[in-house]
Image (cartoon, rainbow, N blue to C red; front, side, top):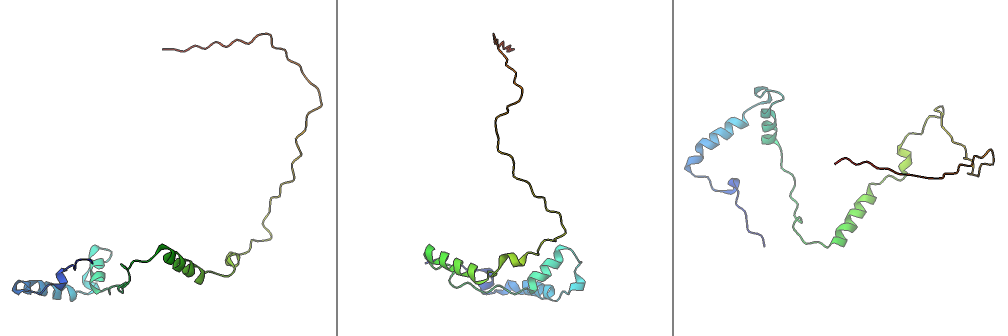
Length: 129
């Protein structure tokens, strides 16, 4: 199993902790009016008065991947809206809709033709070092 962790809050207080307790009492007696708005002090006050999240008892339990996938699939299906497109508002009928016509099938051009006869083709390349 996992080794038990000992936190500061779990330790037995000794005689030197009297000053720490006094500091805690002072911090708890602060009010919102004593702390400047929009500063780090507000967030500290919120943290002191906030409640912890619920414990996840089965967090470290071994669970097969197939079971996790099945649970995730069930949760996705449980909150799914029946008609997804009903959530989006219908487009205005007055808005112009651009409709493109069907393009012509490509065909050979039978108009005037020009015959070009090339007697020589020379390629000279110049590369500077």
